[in-house]
Image (tube, rainbow over all chains, first blue to last red; front, side, top):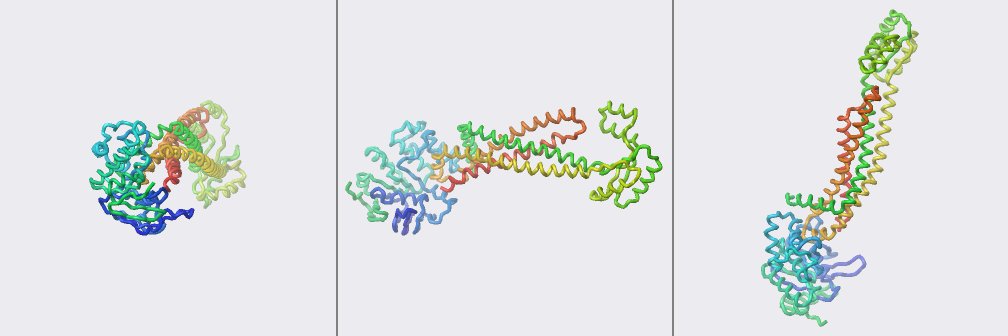
Length: 228
Length: 295
């Protein structure tokens, strides 16, 4: 369970990233985080994986309390999380397989586990035949699938995605969204910040809207709700 | 930490050294130069210490009797000295015995002994051992008052000067070495920084998927250690070859000068250089990594 309790984030320049934000996400949920640019969606996601710390309030993910978490404890939290970015962050000198395997190597997995698990995940994201390609040889949608495979390979409880379809055309974005739905169906909790209005409206999932650093709306089967 | 991780660290350290091979060569060279200087200081002070110990173990004081003194006078002085409380032991020798001892000490200098055999230029005298080395100057003065004594030689001054030389060498060594170590450190730090910079994307991904800080650090520390160790091995090779050559030359042209043994010196220098190389390498990596780990 993710619990955000009265979280305020002040930056040194006096700007407020978040103001008294509270929300709860239960295991197995699929939640969209919507709102205009600069509303605080990314700040909230970054706070969930410990890249930003709250100035006030507390963030709890299962047994982890993030406000006072030390740098030493952070890796243990992150092994429970799969993080997907708009800019994917693939390693250009490694193949698709190596990019995904890298995430397992650096948490100490054995060769045997890696050769067993990575093809499974590539199969899930539909890239089994692209395993020996380099990122530069892939389309934007395919690159994002590699990013998702890397996030999933260590079997995270929570998948956090920050605008994963931001750079993709609507058709590709829709496929990526279906992939997240599949991931959620298989048991992972998904929390996604997005601008993809049509997709949000189609999927009828829980929608949390943030504006000016505050939660303005939280609907169980919601819509994007902004005209743009 | 699993064995998988250890394998990963070594692969990554090797890959990084290979990719930045020019920077690695530059770092290894500076480590070599710095450790070479360290090793030379160790060799020189080992030799000074060697000579100092040799002299300390030799006769403490030698008193030479004036030529043409009667044997009775010599024995009278011997009796008298034996009674002095600050003398532990005293041995009388004739110039014939002195010549014989010399011949045993330097069996290869036959020319010299042919000259001595014709007309022995040596003196009769006494080997004197003091109960307390600090009394030696006073003892020497007392011998000087005796009418039959020609001169007194004691190694107190020599030993004291050598000890002081040893101390000066050690301090100069540490200062020079300290400066060199700082320069070397800076170069290794830069090499590791470059390696960190070249791999910043990997590091970012590693952190995001939950690699521990130590997992991220190890390849860079291994890289620093490898640079230090390679530098030490090259410096050792150079110094041992050099000292080997010097020792070989010295036995031919400086037979009177007791060189410290090759093996005993080399065991000292290799400990210093290898420890020095590893410490510098590890320290440089830690300094280079400090900043990015605060992210």
